[in-house]
Amino acid sequence: MGKIKIAIAGVGNCASALLQGIEYYKHTGNDPIGLMSYDFGGYKPGDIEVVAAFDVDERKVGKKLRDAIFAAPNCTTVFYKDLPDYPVVVQMGHVLDGVSEHMVDYNSDKSFRVSNAKPVDVAKVLKESGAEILINYLPVGSEKAVRFYAEECLKAGVGFINAIPVFIASDPEWEKKFREKNIPIIGDDIKSQLGATILHRTLTKLFENRGIKLERTYQLNFGGNTDFLNMLNHSRLASKKKSKTQSVQAELKNELEKENIHIGPSDFVPWLNDNKIAYIRMEGRGFGNVPLYVEAKLSVEDSPNSAGSIIDAIRAMKLALDRKIGGALTSISSFTMKSPPVQVTDTEAKKMVQEFIDGRRER
Image 1 (cartoon, rainbow, N blue to C red):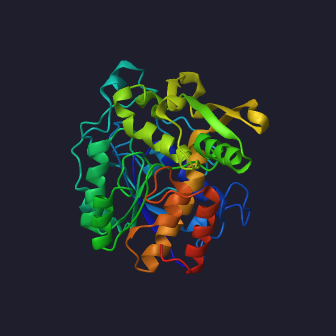
Image 2 (cartoon, one colour; image 1 turned 90 degrees about the vertical axis):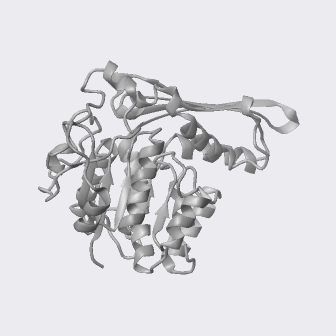
């Protein structure tokens, strides 16, 4: 069915895991282990091809993509080393608010070091590369930078997948811009394949389905990658906390009061690298109004977990491009994102995605 030509903004751990995964599944036959969908409407993981990449770190800008995805401060697990020599050089993006000022206080092997190269014309690069889709992997809190890349996609006629918690696809005004230009958009804030959010949502739905009244809950997260280091600057966390919280609240008929739910990043532990540890506690009352408590711990490599969802989002967007559908793709957004334009249960979202693949649902 042809190639799916993508561009990436932010050549960090998530990009590294995605590219390794594309090659891994390309060379392991029809093995579906680790994938939600091996064949997605006729498109396989190996059909995805990177044609452009943008970053701002001096260790990545001007470097071949194959080298850049393994350059510091990237620290995700290397599960597939034999990558092709991509004919792509990482180009200098626009910094704007993409790098938190506290990064300079940490060792360079864990933090960003901004290149002094001149930013490129992103829309022009997208057009000349033949990119059909841009994946936004910028750091959490990059409000201005994300909006800049969204605008560049509108200029270039390129689909936009927003993997971070800056509200674009779920913002009616932004969604209207993409719909009016008939350009598809998926977002916002990637919901990992089996991450803290999906686990927390599933447990919350279990309480609802079994007649247990959830009274209080928290989710605490720790990690050692640049994402967690970036989030030590709490001024960048407003959208992140809102995104994660509303994703869990969506599984409840009656939302919890703000003081009874706490969800969000908690700390940076350097030696954890790309391993993310999440602690979830849920307090409720069951039969006879008797108290019960649930505690869960999740330990997972963060970036491959993200790539497991993005690889479906990419192929869903390609189907939309093939079908000339613009605007927010509500089905795949609900399935793969924490803050989609339409919040539904994960079971319903999966059903919607299958209907979209089959052509029984427009978006």
